[in-house]
Length: 259
Image 1 (cartoon, rainbow, N blue to C red):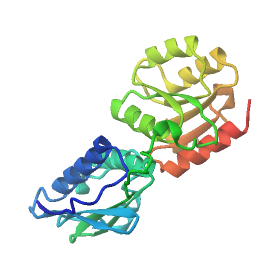
Image 2 (cartoon, rainbow, N blue to C red):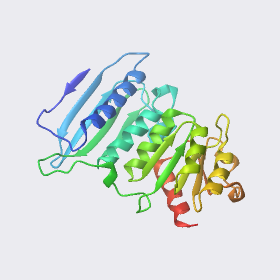
Image 3 (cartoon, rainbow, N blue to C red):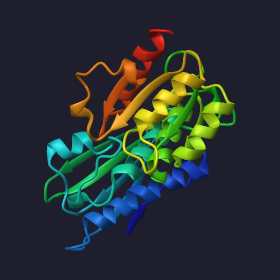
Image 4 (cartoon, rainbow, N blue to C red):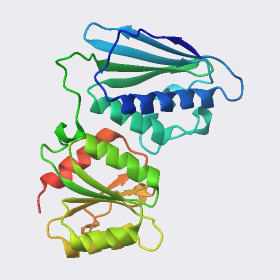
């Protein structure tokens, strides 16, 4: 690994979050060079009131279509490593800090990830998830249910970054208990889960909490997108993989319709 770092540069992001992002990008680069080897370079530069960080590898690279989707939740490809969730979380952390994360890549020629973050000064206010602007301009209480811990963590991170109060659960039985004890504005649930399906959970949520909205997340979304599932307790369906802005738009629409 080769580093070109300016120790005088300071970015306005929590240290642990930047560490997580760089770790994810480095692991992604290692995966991309697993077969043929190569070099990873990390560079920093000053962009007046911003800090620019580049993570560069000489690995297998990506085609244009893959590069467009690499930050999508649940999207991954063996050709560029097990990157789907890690890169999605990285994107969420950088955007939450007021920065940008982009990628340039050419198939068989390597990949460069670009991070741009606000510069830190004594007068800077560190970003706080609780002070982020909520998706629908108000704070929602959201229950996220999926039987995969990584997916629960990812969705929780995304929604908390948008300013919402989020409870993430990987066990449907625990979700049932919570729905009977607490009030939620929105339920995001996977469809296929052991023991209890997303459909069953949606019906229970509607019976337990007046006005709650339910969005179903599923890899089988194409089978349900054109169906009216209101009678089953489902207000909207989002297909995996999805983009952050797609999920945001659906939340806007569902919450905006009211009870």
